[in-house]
Image 1 (cartoon, rainbow, N blue to C red):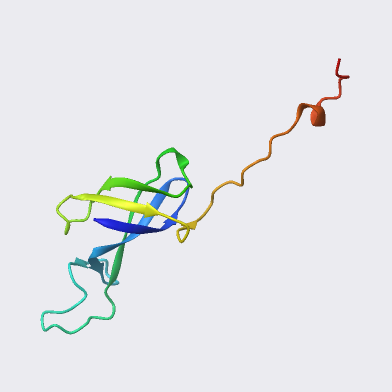
Image 2: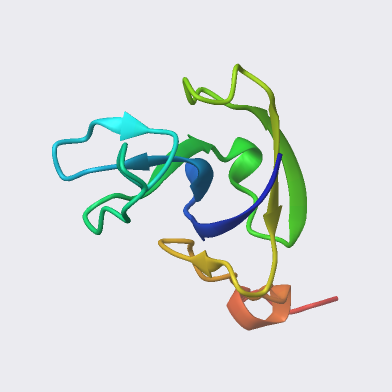
Length: 107
């Protein structure tokens, strides 16, 4: 199953599962329709969370095993691209040259 991540943090990757839906009471189902075929508006795609190994923030495709009860434990390929929101990552720091912090004369 191929999905797109909608949010990554230094510890988690989250995506909306296309195979299961949740209502406000957190009960899951395989469709957003009732037994009579009508659309049930309060069922939304379930958001699943997986670990973000190595604190990665770059664009990539990561493989995880689904823990969704409706997908029978199949592999999930999560695509992290430019549309993925990145949150709580530290800003990259600039390298400090030795001449900027060293007060000793250079020989």
